[in-house]
Image (cartoon, rainbow, N blue to C red; front, side, top):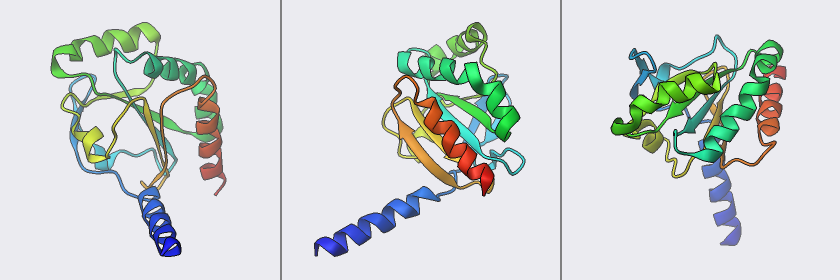
Amino acid sequence: MKRFLFVAAMLAFVGTMSAQLPSVTLKDISGKSVNTAELKNDGKPFIIDFFATWCKPCNRELDAIAEVYEEWQEETGVKIFAVSIDQAQNINKVKPLVDSHGWEYDVLLDPNSDFKRALGIQMIPYVLIVDGKGNIVYKHNGYTDGAEQELIEKVRELVKK
């Protein structure tokens, strides 16, 4: 019985590791509608990073990535979509925060947490890596200093394939 449960758990885990992005319509920071199922990066991997203006670990993570983002792009072509889950009454704080930190990410707004909920995300910061075919291949929540190194290592593995 234990073996059966282990196998079932592993199959469920593997199944979630190659899931596609759900289709949710969000707006980007300039107000343009974006369907999340259509996010892509010219066949290269991309990272989706869920954050909020009030989330200190989220901001530290996005700052740490910002310091090396240009190098990551040159090396791997990776792109980052930062998804704010700030509610409607705080949505006007997102652009000033992004501008003040100098983040060069594509920023999407998820004020009702529809995208977050569709992915089953409970806590932020939460990061997904999506391969060039649109499959979710890595998930991570929380942030500790230096964790961004694990992200770029996973992206490098995908680029080598």
